[in-house]
Length: 127
Image (cartoon, rainbow, N blue to C red; front, side, top):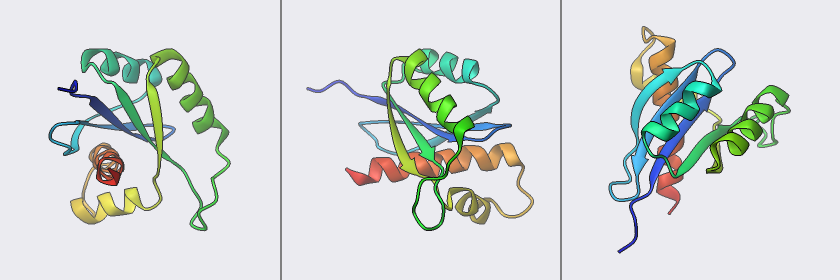
């Protein structure tokens, strides 16, 4: 029997990083929390025993990759320092989808967690 893999979904922003988790058995992404920096993400990877990281990749509405060097630096550091596989998923409209689920009165931290959940669930649904 194959080992259950644990996933961490990530909705990166310059001020906040929304996180969600799932595993390969249930394949249902759930909001986890919002953090503010890479060190906090790395701690959660260890605490939650994460195997695979699924990060939202910023893209233009045309589908072309957005030229975001701060995000790219974050992803490179995440790959290097975590030692985990990092999968990228198109994150276009994930924040808008989170807003539509939560309503206009939602707090931004909650929106980031829901956006991370949407990103992770999109990855899990690909299989």
